Length: 85
Image 1 (cartoon, rainbow, N blue to C red):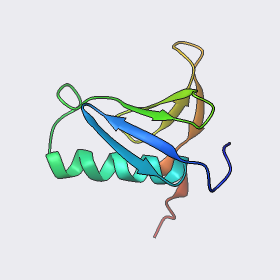
Image 2 (image 1 turned 90 degrees about the horizontal axis):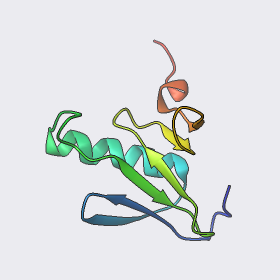
Image 3 (image 1 turned 180 degrees about the vertical axis):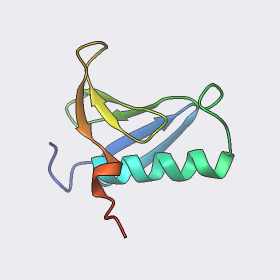
């Protein structure tokens, strides 16, 4: 993954946001999704642009993926960070 000081860019539709990390991109995507209140059929997939130009996908549930279906590799799952209780 990129170094902490290298810029990453999250694109959601026409909007582009600078983010600090893959985890930050996932959280910012989810916040924007929740703010807009759009369902999965109306809210665009996110694109996380890494410093080397690689583009990762951010799906509606906030998961971050590398590659194309059906072989896409899960890079980050925000549900795995939640602690029950």
